[in-house]
Length: 236
Image (tube, rainbow, N blue to C red):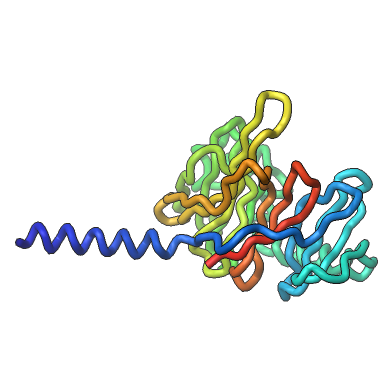
């Protein structure tokens, strides 16, 4: 009887954990499409706009969160984007990762097991206490405390992590290729404590890359490589 109760308790505990993992709601919808291929979406600080660039011209574009007023961004918007990047880089270790990706792991005690690898695509959690990043040569994705301690692997084949608003999960892209070009792009969420993954979007219709979670944690914007468009999908 005690074993049955224990088994039920464990089932309920892990079941609740799995239910808490972010899930996609509905189908993705186009929020921006032009005669140029659009890439690398990023939400404005207040979540009212999306900024992204043209892969051909490098021009910065913007659109409202509802998909209205698509236009090339003004100098003012460009300055705001630069200010946002500066804010994101306010953590000392994050700044080290950006400034010295080749040597940072050998200089930080908690990261020295990765001293032979380059660190790239670091992202600070909204709560400011953790950093997620990638290590070169297929080593994979890692998370650590903001000072480099408590280093943990989040597995291989995941990139471009974007934090959910509660700092408990990251949304990542998982790409496939034929050795010459990207042929597949999926979106997944990863629990940064357990490493458990959950598929958010996996469809032959979309080569989904470069996800970015909205500030309120309710949407994920991503680049659809095969269309050159920016899409948004709701999550909960």
